[in-house]
Length: 442
Image 1 (cartoon, rainbow, N blue to C red):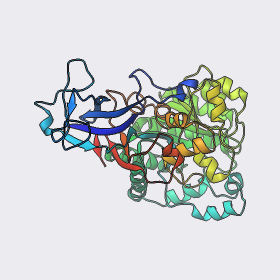
Image 2: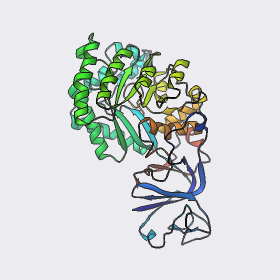
Image 3: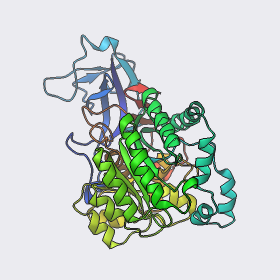
């Protein structure tokens, strides 16, 4: 099946096939082609380029690209157009109407498999209680664990799919989903089975992250070391046996899990060949970044509170610093030092942290806007942080995150807009015209 997108005002986010992430100053640029076309075959980008009048015409009006009806692209050998004479009759044509075409967002940090919501805690936040104070009173993550325990796997899948469809409609084409609201062996497995079902039934690309060490389960209150043993000796073997997780994660932060706990869990995960990731430095400078780098974590996430020591620990590593501005926005806590990390030559990814307690939104366009408005990133830096770098942070930048021949055709088509900067600048204006996942329009 072939699809041709034509009359593209600007094709944005073009990268060579060997680029997996952008570091430091590399994030300052977004390669674009104006007046472009793009070809999709069997869900994969197979060709794109600039319209040329001597090679490309439309049957109803051959004078300009994008005027008239169906697209016919004619070419000479080795050019970046194609010859449609025998095969284009069965192609599907999409008129971009002068809008941007860009890679769909990738969201490498979410908790969208959860039961119910925590809108009751919203009043506590308004009254001035901190995240830590709500957790200390038995709310927060433990509240979600209680709700999830009472929810059937079928109902949990149904509730979660509503959120998955929501983020897809807002332009997200890949998502990492964490467990961590189970906190018992069976409930963690229930969450991961729901994530697996989403992966099997939704067109979005999904990666699963086992976060049994999100908090200490209620039954283990005051016995944290025993809970860590439960994660290592009972949860991890079951998760590995059923092949339910692409990653393993630990909330290494003040009031949650220590560096020693984290080291123990990640060492055990390594025995099963599960790639580590880390929640770190949301509440305090916790040492989580350093232990993550020690274990070769694919990403270290949150980073609202960091120092030069974290930058130095990450320098030269393959670990992606991932910041979650939606959490900072909702909780009123500091934003990560994305600008400083980039100036130090490091890459930065941005993700939504979509969850019921501290970031109840999966709108990656708003994340891109917060990257600009609150973190002082340029539109180009924020765009790269929400596409290729966050694809890297979930291990999919070989197949997603850029306009590259051979990558999945997960794309956003916008209405005509004056610039890339307009997308985060006017972040509430409904500019997304169409979302394409695996080459198919939603």
